[in-house]
Length: 355
Image (tube, rainbow, N blue to C red):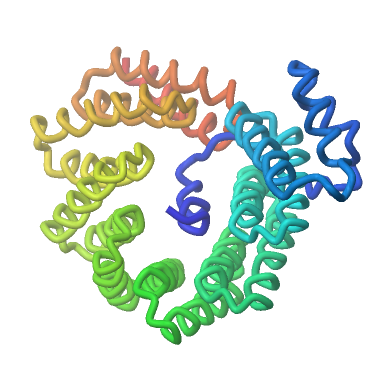
């Protein structure tokens, strides 16, 4: 799944919420990898090797910094990750390796977006777009334009987002890219949905799903199908909503993406709660619990506890609901999620009055 979509769905409660340039120097890079002094020295030395150093050696340096940046990002050490990824991008740029540079930039955009630093993320994406245009790389242009639109969407600038997604669609259509067309149409569906134009959103999503299936873009199709499920549910097309969420779940399992699976499962849980079908509700709730454990994501753990508490409350099991809401509140305080804290506190007060 591309950044654009993940960022859109990172409103699902993504983990932790700068551009450190190459001028940050080798001292910072050395400090980042101090636990491995020999390796750090090797990387530093190789960066300053004389002109006779081989392309392969320089490529190894870039790859090492990229891997280091990935590890730091996954462990939540974002500042360290940014330094390493910037260095990787610089070396890839020197080597003319656009694929490697694109991967480093993609991860930088993910970090800045997760931190809510959309201006910094936008600068990276615009750099990608300029390079893609210079090299007439149309697939990268489509991706960059959709990422720009997504960043605008994150800041509620729907007009700019629409323009970026529309340009992405035009570029994709000019080269008959099913994958690019599907991505751009799906994102245009997000704009229509945000503007309350459900009929337009449904048309965008349905057409996008066809292109994404044709491109065998299973992750993209899963994302679009969940969005389509939301529109069907909002417009009262219940059976279509169930079908869309189930198709999304199948595609998400195909690519083994737990977050896409959670997205589809949440839609199905919402439906079966409203329909009061305990058997199906229990099945999908168990799926959510298992996926929460698999991700190790505290935000997903919080959402699972909250969902379980709401179900217990609806069933009249107030003591169990109170316990689960209390555990969720403790986690919300730890994660500093103030809006969720307020909601959970109000729910606990209501339960206390009932009991």
